[in-house]
Length: 305
Image (cartoon, rainbow, N blue to C red; front, side):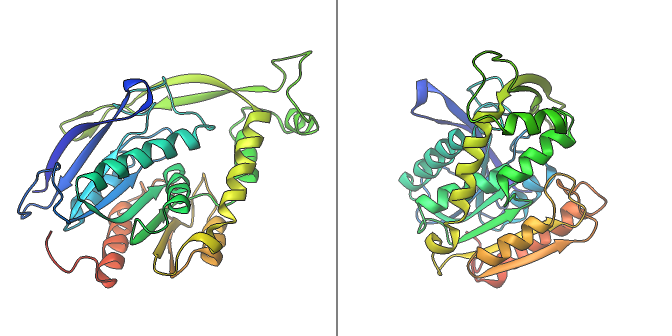
């Protein structure tokens, strides 16, 4: 059985913190998080409307690695402090969380082996690596979105947050409407990931919030501009893997193909009939095996650490 250590990692912002779980193999010599002693640690990032144990794949990965891993709740998710809910605009707030988590680990002499991100967590991981290209040895992109602005604009229409006609009208504006301040705002049915009890995920609460489409466009366009830098900034020493379901209902599998064109030393694996969270029969287990086997083939798991 893997050993789990639950902890809070303090952040610089207003005495806030993130809730985290460090997982160690059953035969690990030490389960102390305070002194890595140069051992390997992989960091796992969840997506929006999720938490460190949701989807289940994240926990499976942590329990299958023969070295330590740490998964944590972004602020506004799960058991972490912060705002009531994580919004579609909060990518750079999540980047700040991931940055401080990695700094916390590095200060304790852990060697970051891989950064593993699911959905929004994948994009946040990319933002981190663009700024810290030599920190991880590997990057694993699970169900990540490549075409951010176009993809999220399609999503707000598909999820019926706004009609196609209203969106088209809003896109013609160059700034939020001062005469009708509510016109360019849409209500999102946010979701805060629930707590864990004996390993079982509890359903979280829905937390409605509003976003301004114009604000969204600015953030999403900036993210698209960041993604373009991958081919230039990501070092050739970094190996990368994308795992994506062919029936992903949230991010189309075509985005995985786009990542394949820019990520260095890249392996693309499509999981047949897999959805966004790999909740189909055996899909989480299959995806977990793909990830662990891929890491093993690259010599990162040569010893029990």
